[in-house]
Amino acid sequence: MKNREKRLRIGLVPTRREAFRNEITTKQKEAVVKRFYELAQQLDFDIVGIEDINEEGMLMHYRDVKAAYEKLTAAGVDALIVPHCNFGQEEAVGRLAKDMGLPVLIWGPRDGYPNGLEWRPTDSQCGMFATTKLLMHYGVKFSYIENCALDSDILVHGLQDFLAAANVVKAFRALRIARISSRPKEFLSVMVNESELLEKYDIEIVPGEPTVILDMVDQILAGEKDRMEALLQDLVDAGLDISRLGEKRYPLAAIELALMDFAEDNCCNAISCECWNLFRVKYGVSPCFILGDLNDRGIPAACENDVHAAITSVMAVAASRYTTPSFVADLTIRHPENDNAELLWHCGSFAKRLKKKGVEGYIIEQGKGFYELEGGKVTVLRFDGIDGKYYMFAGEAKGVDGPITNGNYLWVETDDWVKWEKKFIFGPYIHHVVGIHGSYTQIIQEACRYLDIQIDLPDMPNIY
Image (cartoon, rainbow, N blue to C red; front, side, top):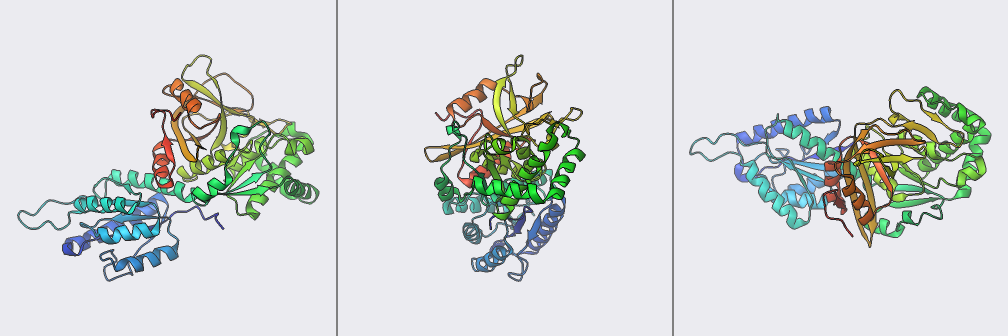
């Protein structure tokens, strides 16, 4: 089963070099461990330590690697933090990092004043240079926080970014996507290579055959009115007007419940769904709003059976550490007055939690949500591939005012829209992007280093 728990579990692996054995190193290790347990409370993650692998609870010798590996693997850690309490033991750190195959954070506390002509007791910065060179020899990707004091904001902010990047890596490596029916006939641009995704990234695509899904919907409609009523009441309680749906509110609820059930039954953590014909023809309602509501409930879901958009959505919400839902949007039209602004739009598939405060939100009879989204900082992402290579576009924009339109929408302003437009013309992308409120470009860029995905920022040369 690949749908793992979302809370991060981090292996804390202090290291020292035998030649630097002294009282200051021991005290520094104790202070480092204490500080990281404080940060674990503050930043909401769990620590698995190595206190019991030897008498000092540090990675000191190559022979310590086996005990550390067994303990951390048994605990199912998602990443490693390796504080250099003095110069550190790069031989052991390199072997452990290589064997674990997880994101690794290298950091060491800033060294104190030299004591005159006496030997310096730590030299942690010096050891980090040695360790990182060895990691490169091993082919191990790693992250790094600059040498700083234990109480420095640099440590806190750097750790926050590392945790978010590690979260993206964890989510990406656990991907199992429910693909409901086939893509719309006209949408050749959302074609994906399932075998390549599996071979290259271990991403599993689970077919949701139309007959199976429709049968699940019919069973819910026939015998689970209480579940449907509870879901509909939840929409009303969230401030949405569902009166325009009329009796179609029950098929809408049943479709959403069926998709949730299918994902849960098949251990899927994302959904890519056909949205043009499958449900509209039989029930007279499209799953547009439903897909947005699934995002609101913690299941990244993409419309028009865009598997790459579903993958992007999983990465986006993981970068936020699940604090806000993402939304799959079309790059639609340029702002009629602002040359650097663009309309992020789709036909009613954005999470209700993202609705702009003070605007009316409702679902029309066809099952589409109608409301503008909240503005602010927005990160725009797109994972896609061509010729066996995969790329991630990442750019940041801000919400601005613009003309009212139908469906769900948000006008965003970029630093230079023409530069962005050329990216989507000459990059391996389509008109679909994923938006998420907040600033996550740096985090996504760091995660892509671990995942063999080429980052593609607006200022980089175009791919084609």
